[in-house]
Length: 105
Image (tube, rainbow, N blue to C red; front, side, top):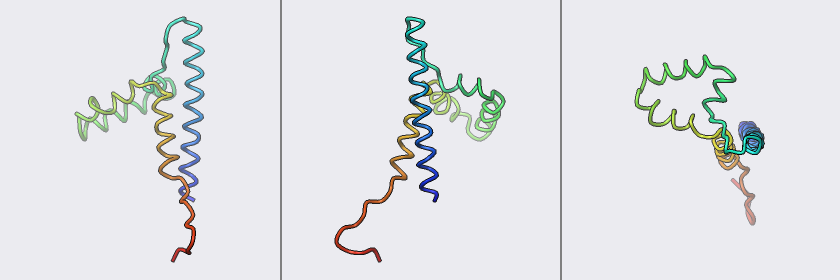
């Protein structure tokens, strides 16, 4: 049950990555320049307060973590981050290969 849920989340993340890839591609063609949507900008467009809340929480625990890890991820293109997370979830929670020749005990 849990495996199926995480596979569904991974598939939805891959679908979202594809949507962002098409969106960024169409914007790049229209502007005649490469235009990528950073994940942090997309998150701000959806709900700006939650990103600020996460920042204050992380800086309270480990201030170096915000600058060294989280901000780097938030500056990456949304389609790349969502695609990597989606693929990771699909690979981690894939079904087990059936054993041939003997039964499981």
